[in-house]
Length: 83
Image 1 (cartoon, rainbow, N blue to C red):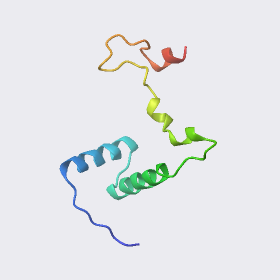
Image 2: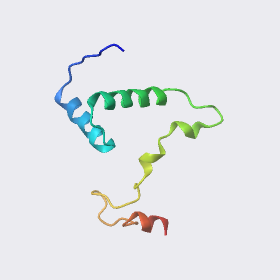
Image 3: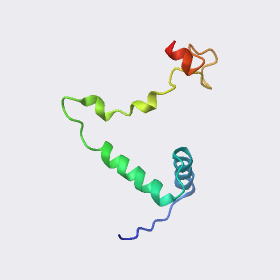
Image 4: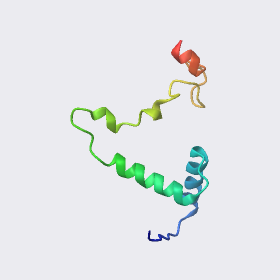
């Protein structure tokens, strides 16, 4: 396997550390590989009969819950959301 070296700015380093913390990764190389793999997979076209496969449904988790911009949310907890 070849080695890949790159210089990064502070913002990239900060964002990479966020990804590592969120996903429980210990190595930067693992995080970069995972991000590139996901980007490559998401750039592939979805089958014409299954367009929903291109959407990351996990981004919707907690979308109806309380947030900093909604002082009076409709649902206070995830349990309320599904009750």
